[in-house]
Amino acid sequence: MNESNNTSATGSQGHAWLSILGVGTLLVAGAAGYAEYTRTNALQHQVNEALHANQTVTALAQDSEARWQKEVSALRAEINVSREQANRNVATVSQRAAQNAQNQTKRINVELSKVKESAALTSAAVMGITSDVGAVKSDVGSVRSDVTTVRADVDVVKTEVQTARTAIDETRIALQRTRGDLGEMSGLIATNSGEIGQLRALGDRNIYEFTLTRGALQKVGDIQVQLKKADKSHNRYTLDVLADDKRVEKKNRTANEPVQFYTSQARQPYELVVNQVMADRVTGYLATPKVTLSRSGPR
Image 1 (tube, helix red, strand yellow):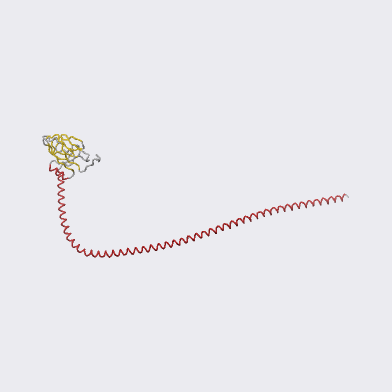
Image 2 (tube, rainbow, N blue to C red):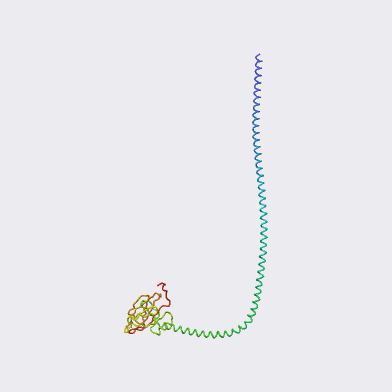
């Protein structure tokens, strides 16, 4: 009886383990199925997203292609317009070039006609000149003879000029130079009426001859002079010079001594020379520079 009970107990335990094993198997199979279901859903979701992305890309591609086709059509239209405009420009330029060439040809023809007319006139003129050459040659002989005569006259004139120059040089040697009472080197000094004439002929300065009487205020050139004293025995004199509203006394000067003074009219000094001293008068000359200054010029 104990063995029957043990056998029954053993059989019951075996059925229990089989039940547990079956439940475990079902649980494992269920878990595996759920995992597969989850993966399948994830894959389906990814496939759906991929299909949606593909549809989006396809739509974008179609939109881009439509825009590209539109831009290509616009570009082709613009190219056609540019080609037509270029063809019109080429036609216009060609027409203008042809017109300019035609006008230039007309101008050249006109110029050629003028040149031909000028050449004809020149030929006629040359024929006339040729006919005149003989007359000119005949006149050349008479001109040559006249030139010979003129050359002879020129030689005579040269001789006369050389003689005059020699006389002027001799005159310069005869005239004297000395220092005036201001210490300035004077011009050439004349000591008598003959030398005064030679000095005037040189033309270097203005020459004014004078005879001064004692006590009288006399005008000489552009100044005034008053003789105050004349000492014949010592050949000396004293006088006053009035220039530029100023009075300057020249005291105890000797004959043929250059008396110098400046005025506002010139940069070089005036020179007064007494050649002869008498009891109550003196004679001589005043020499002034040729170049004078204006009243408003520098002094």
